[in-house]
Length: 278
Image (cartoon, rainbow, N blue to C red):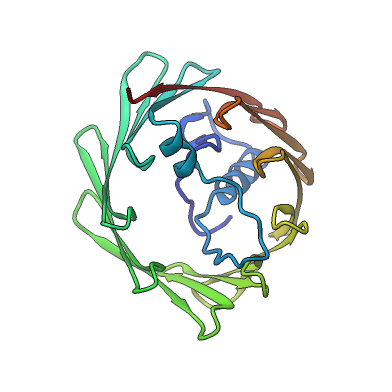
């Protein structure tokens, strides 16, 4: 399996809430890894030749979204709070009995970037600290566990900004970018320098990512994506060893209202609802 997991970002279904009962099969672990990878934060410098869909922050600021609730078909739900600039400042995760399981709170700098994330699970507390370079790019990430032990992740770039390397105690991820500033390939390497996964990306003429092809330990995955006129993801069809279809629905404002995951061993539905600033 891959050496580490990443926290799910907003809009895409946060699979950390999908708690399976009993031991997971190999297929379930494979599906979960690929789902987690979908939401790795990416460095994508954009040129004038690329049309960019409105970001979640842009939409939430424009429509004055104060809170979003995600309801899962297993009874779990999340509540996420935003400031008036559309920036995420707090997340709360609840189980089917309405018991709070985990809380994330975020401290932002003057540029709206997260500089500290505090994760509270009962009496346990985990902290992540982030720094950025003068160009606003990721520089370091420090994780401090409940015992006070820390690990550091560093980010480096080449002089032409064609690559980004993320390195920690487990190994590294190297992202390669094309002339339009779009990620074309990601290579994951172990701490020994051995390649354990490679992912290739393809885009349409306006910069929408339309294909991802990956291989991990002999497991082949091909994702094909389609978009609406706003450039928002409508459907992701996953072929290869694991076959899954993911469908996204939006309202007239462009806010995501529903996510459906069909096929595989983890089918699910998530419904999103919103509250607004006055």
